[in-house]
Amino acid sequence: MLKKILKRTFLILLLAFIVIQFIRPTKNKAEGMSNNDISKVYAVPAEVQSILKTSCYDCHSNNTVYPWYAEIQPVAWWLNEHISDGKKDLNFSEFAGYRIRRQYKKLEEINDLVKKGEMPLESYLWIHKNAKLNDQQKLVLANWVTSVRDTIKANYPADSLIRKK
Image 1 (cartoon, rainbow, N blue to C red):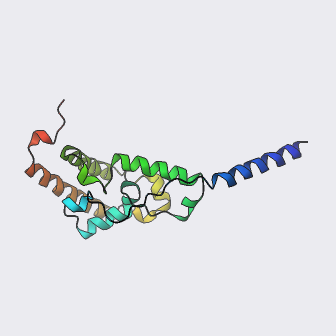
Image 2: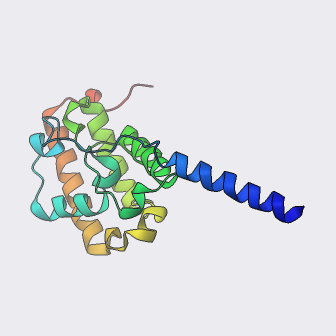
Image 3: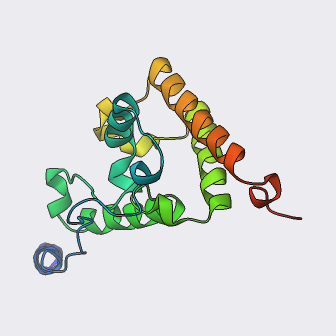
């Protein structure tokens, strides 16, 4: 009796697993570079661009490079939610479309999160070992972020960069 129940349960779970393979989220793949890409308004040196592509763009741009396991449900759903959340917080492909105050704030957040080791996320680094930032890469990124923020600060009034309380 128990054997029969276990077999039936296994078959139901197997069938459910097969059925969910046909329910797929939309891939995060844009055609070409967005007109609002950060590189359209700020100089992004090759070294910084390389760091961003390797460690940030999968979750924070309109173009994700998907691993093989992204084809398996429910993993693809989890990845899709992760990417959606990342893009909601910061999207380098749409960065130029942000208000200047938000750009300024996001750059500050990049610096803080990278310095604290909170970005890239630990869960991302489990599989993407090459995305882990070493001290030199963190310094390169911090210097670039600081220079972009200084450029913004030089071109906009201070009260336009800070949210009034």
